[in-house]
Amino acid sequence: MPTQNVVSKEEWVAKRKELLVKEKELTRQRDQVTKLRQSLPWVKVEKNYEFEGPDKTESLSDLFAGKRQLIVYHFMFQSDWTEGCKSCSLIADHYEPSLSHLRARDTNMVTISRADIDRIELFRQRMGWNFKWVSSAKSDFNFDFNVSFSTNLAEQKEVYYNYQVGSGFPSTEGPGMSVFLKDDDGSIYHTYSCFSRGLEDFLGIYRLLDISPKGRDEDDLVYGMEWVRHHDRYGDETFKDIYLELLAPRHRDK
Image (tube, rainbow, N blue to C red; front, side):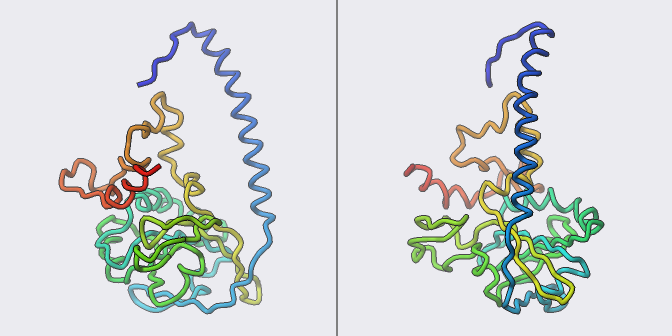
């Protein structure tokens, strides 16, 4: 628990105004970065990707569902897992309520994983989500967008993730967000992707914790999101955190 000075209201307001100056600087800088992001060049998608849904197979073009823009969340779900990544689940809890608002702005959003569709559907239903979630198990989509790696962890000597080559990865899947646009003739373009801490912008829980005195309170954890559970597993003593086994050795070696 942090220990802070206790001051008068007048002194607190003076300090708060000093911080407000910095907050406004950050807001303006964020606006500048947003403009730079939206001015990035595009890459035309040449492959015909297909995805398996619960009822039918769909193309990348189909996933736009009549909208011009498509946001894809690359949800970590290895083929041998019985449930999806808990941290990706936390992000999904945030974007699920936003989908109708996105559609009102000419934007569709779908979730894509490498796991087979039957496992995906069981987990989606368990979590009570209604968003569209399809499997890319029969395509190169995840590999082409750098969120799937070798299916054999022992073979992962080097992995390209978040625009750099690193020494391995703790799982065969990584999280990410990708954005696509479809023009009038049906051509599809890849316009943006982000990974790793770039995904924190979509975690409102962190924005709320960041304004609290204790903040994220993660310094003493084995890894930052060790505290996170699937929303139906808080207080469940039988919960098994697969990431402790996967990530703890890497943290000990730092």
